Image 1 (cartoon, rainbow, N blue to C red):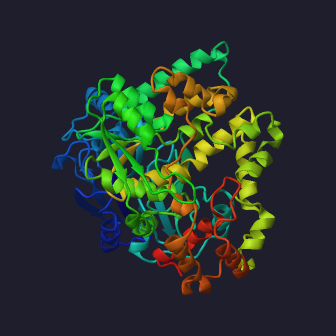
Image 2: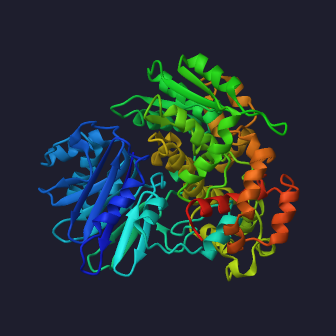
Image 3: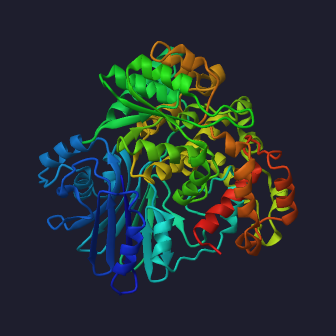
Length: 594
């Protein structure tokens, strides 16, 4: 896991190496183990390294291969790199390191743009062809690794974080009104290629972009999961699906133990992370380091799930770490988490992940996480209401249960000059749901959540918060082969037993029943869900700051009403509406956006 940055000049000038170095320097937290730079005429690359595979200097980046005429900067992990290396050696390639980065470079030399089809893993990379000047940018299937772009006349810049692009200078930081509409409507999700800043785009997941030296470019999407039934499995029983799902997850967690450093697990005490621990124990892992977090209760909400995480840790003999976050850490933790966000992310889980990652990074460099299971396997509350909804009515039904507010209400919250010229979020969801495939309303919702919402909310949250401390998070439920299998599972099996039924049933006898039968939990941060005291004051300060007043995003009467009753207004999914407004202002102010 690392951070990359670079510039491609399209106007005949040499790349601005100074700007690339400044961009790279902002990502020391993503790669605390080393820094590298490379430039060649119109192209410059920078890299911050987190050493996980091949800890030697041979794995340093950017990696230059004069034999193939390629240079690559890579962020992520290719879990099947050893198998690919054997294939490439058999094809005549010679290696000078044992790193997966060199496998990426040689794979491109062997298979060209199709190399991404061979990779099992999470990745974002930029590759330069010396002879042609062509630059190739790619992102993994589920968008686990980020890649942001600043395209302007005469140049293209790219980086693993928005803050890196800002450090390079010259970014158009005006707010994108369409992206703002998505943030305020689509549960704070801003779909690719947009970001909240008009001058910053992001490469969509499962996408390869090829940029020619003259600035022309083309891109293609190389993977789309299929949410339809498989005729070859038409006679499968519920038990067949359960067995196949568990086998796929076994493979996924085993793949994610590939490292030259120890790998731990973030153990919340929920079924997803508990199952990861159980399967690793089943595969012979002993003394596995596990980590859980807890906060003080607030507003009648419990702040920890230690009872469940400790039960799992004891059952499987892990080296368990219970991290009890002192109240004194929470308020500064909010600002620190906002500072770690490449884009505004409203989930209070961000603060929990940030504080957890800070402590976990003192013990290990790599962890597995149960993130993604709810989106892939139907674990959220908005899926059951879609069961039985006619396919042609699915988009509207989804909007009713998922959107934070509808278009008419948004016009009552935003000042008129900040309102987009059309209901972009509704149009986007309608377009997604109208795509071929996805047989039922539930299938369509799961497809959209897996390929869009998951990418730009929970996945991004985990990457940003863990990498703030040079901690690599691996997500076995987002193994693309498991996702493909999950897409084929009949929706009624996913919605059974209150959600994720197929996973719960597959887990019987593998994890304790108490974990399977418990009420669904989250990373709890009650002080944010129930705003009061210094946390309410932080929100008030953000929304009444001179920068916020000058920007004038929100109608003053709305802000005043929410501040007067800070916990009264909730979104359709139960989030604190005031926090959503304040978080956006905190992020804009933290990044100097005026």
